[in-house]
Length: 317
Image (cartoon, one colour):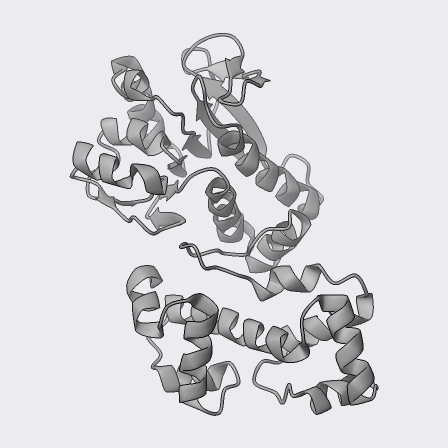
């Protein structure tokens, strides 16, 4: 799959390098080096200087590029007004968007797409500091201010900087499934399927940081058996250890108590279900191992900083 990332002068390096690394790691995990082929395009000849001052060589310009594109992304830059007004570039983007399997933007790259009309009537995301400006300049676009990334049909758009990696990870999951996306996220030390907002966490990310393999195995057991008895006595018995030794070993290896990790894992699973289904609170609690719905609600609010109803209002797809 050929991924073309269109970048402009003063682009933010991570807007390009972040997604590129996700696709490259996915290809490595698949054992197929050419599963994703990333190309950097520009509107003009020559290397591009990023906002940090580092330069990046480009593979082609919009005028010289030849060949099919599977996925087309537009990277952001602090000043895109001239690019958004470039009629030749707009026509190229419209033509390409009609032929690719999917297209989108990272960060303020949304402004360039919006100028073409490709965002009209679409749900879109951009950097939190630019959402009001995008809404005012292009009222036909349905800007979602809190979103890390948004998928609307063939259109994928993301917030700024590292959010482009979340966007690329969602594409990898769409192409090859959740297991591969998880392997890529673990290798790159990312949150898996981060939904947006400022108070996000991932039990899967925590599980990869334990130094001892025995503790990682226990964390994987917890993640795979959320509805089971995950009390300290039950986990200690599963590990073949005394409760005191188990609690000490787990905290030393994981940096948190068993009870804290179990709560994190259950709430992480619950917020995913809350995004993807309309299960009521009682059934959500049951699905992730809570016997008491009130205890579940308190834990949800404590861990995410927002109640279940408000969380769904912001993030349910």
